[in-house]
Image 1 (cartoon, rainbow, N blue to C red):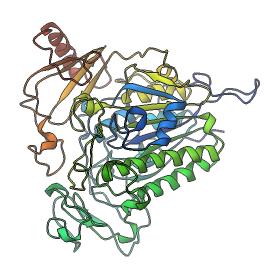
Image 2 (image 1 turned 90 degrees about the horizontal axis):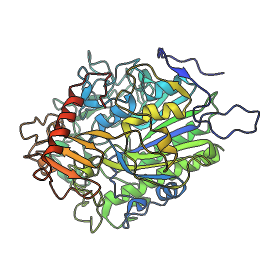
Image 3 (image 1 turned 90 degrees about the vertical axis):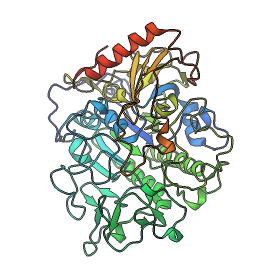
Image 4 (image 1 turned 120 degrees about the horizontal axis):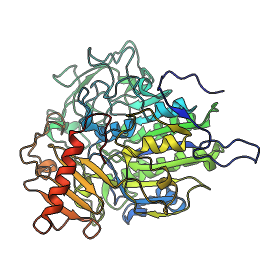
Length: 529
C-alpha cells in the first residue's frame, strides 16, 4: 500500500517499469530504486581524489566514482546555493522566479517555492516514495506575511513542498538561527528559553564578533561579525534557545545519525533522501578527529569530514540491506571558495591544491570553476563504472529522477528548464539530450554554454543585490563578477577559459547572445530549444 499523499499533481502518470530495479525473481514486478542525493556545499570540481586532488583524502567519494559513473561536464545552474537548490527542486532556473526571492537567503527569509507546487520530492512522493530531507535547506521558511515564529510552528517549509519528513539547517551555517528544525519545530527547544533572531538590529546580550574578537576561534570580516555562537561570529543576531544550538564540530555526526535513522526504517514504498551537507561551506569547524587529516588546512579537513559523511550514508544503506537497490548521486551546489568571510588559515594553508582543478574562477562567478561541479552516480547492477563527458545540469534532476522513479509523465510546465537525462545518468554510452545550459552568477552575471561554445556577456552595469546582506560589492570575492567585456570560449579546446575568441568568431557571439536573450525572455513554463 502506498502512502496517502498531500499533493494533487494533476496529470502525473505513474509507471512501474520506466527504469526498474533488479527484481527478486521473474514473477516479481520490477521496482524503482531508492534514491539518495548528497548535495555538498561549495565543493569544488577539483576538491576530491577522483577529480584530481592529491592533498585531500576522499576514499568514500572515490570509491563511489570507481563503482559508478563520474561526470566531467555537470553544471550547477548557479554559482551560489539558493538558486541552484531552487532549480534542483523545481526543474526551473531560479532567475525565472519573480514573486519569490531566490538569491542568497537569510535564515528568516520566506519560502522560495510556492507551497503545493510540483517539486522533485513531491513528484516522487506521488509515485509512492517516502521523501526525507536531512541537512542544509536554504530555500526559506514562512509565508513572508509575518515574522517566522521559531518558538511555535515553523513553516511553511520543506513539508509543504514535497517532503514527508525533514531535519534541516534553515540557511547557511554562518547565519542565524544556529538551530536544527525538525519538521515544523526547532529541535530540542526549551520553551522557557525562546529563540529570537534579527538581521536588522542587535538583540539580546550575547557578544558580537566585531566587539569581542578575543572570544573567536578565528577572525571574520564585517559581514560575519555579528552574534558569536560556539566561538564563531555569524551573520545576524540571536538570543535564547541555548539548549537547541548546534555545535559546529558535531553537525556531521548529527546528520549521519539522522540519515541512518531514516534509512533503517521500513516504508511501504521506496525512499528518496536528500542530504544537504554543510561542508565545506564556512565556517570551517570539523570535528577534532578530522583536524589535520588533509594537507591544506581546515577547509581541506572539512572535505575529509564530508567524505566521512558520504561513507556513513553508504554504510547505512549497506546495513539496511538496500545498497544494491539504491541510486546514489553525489554533487555540489556550486563551485569552491577558499576565503568566504573567515580568516581561518585556509588561504595560507592551501598549498598546491586547486579547489576548482584546471578550471577558472569559483563560487559567485559564471566561469567554469563557479558552476561546473562534480557529479557521481552509482547504482549497482544498473550503472557501469566509467566516465561521461556528456553535458548535464542539476536542473535536470527532477525530470530524470522522475523517470527513474517510475513517473511516466509530468504535467505540462513542470521541470520546464530540465531535460530527461535519465539514460545519461545510467550509461556513459548514452548521449545527453541537453545541448545548452544557462549559468547564473552574482552581480547580474549570466553565461550560456552551447555545445563546445561558452558566451559570457558584459554585466558592467549589473546590480549586485544578491551577494548577501552587508557584503561589500568591492570585496575581492566579487570583483571578478563584474565582467567588463563580452567573452567567448571554446571549452573543448580551452576548458580553463584562458583565451577570449570574441574577435575571431563574432558570428558565434551574435548567435549565442540572441539565444541567451531568448531563453531569458521566455516566461515560466517555457524552455526554448
